[in-house]
Image 1 (cartoon, rainbow, N blue to C red):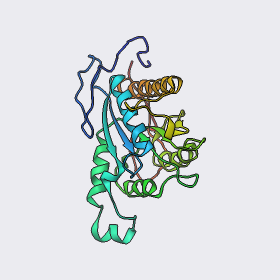
Image 2 (cartoon, rainbow, N blue to C red):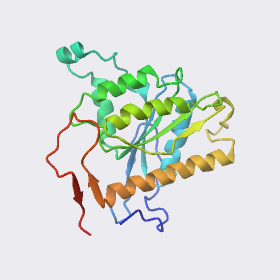
Image 3 (cartoon, one colour):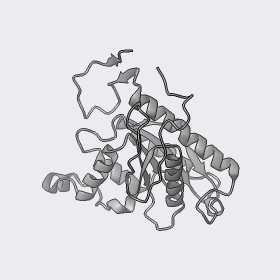
Length: 242
């Protein structure tokens, strides 16, 4: 059993205002997908923020529901184990966890700082890693980046994969890195290069197809993953009835 590749518009259609999860009609085979689209940049007008907005639009054009947010909306202190013990989780990390839990997948638009992941992004992941159950467990993730450099922020995405996969996220193999981002966007927020726009759209569409297949048509549920902070009494593999 697999994704319904022969069913056009399998997710439905919807528009999405900023920071609002849209309700979309189902297609009779299950509820619509929810995708949390998060810009990892704190700077207003950032290229990764613009890429996040474009990706959220493509998510909705392909029929899923997009919840768009900026990491600056979840300002949290540097992780401190003593502070966590004394005061618990900061409200901003609880809010971020709840947004993540409400979705079947996350799209992370993250900058590259010094050939790696920005400290503010890693700090947010460190706070979220302390929750039980672990909110990243079995969450599908698509990584995108934008940078004025010729590398397009790709090195930062490779660094970002490591903690996400360690915490149980299913990070999509294909990543999208937008080079020369200062010249890439038109006035409407779309990409000037039609080929890059088609590639991003194809990546989003393929990612959503995988998420839908895993969400609505699980042929095999995997219960093991690298992060051992959670425990489960379920068998290692469980086959769904045909």
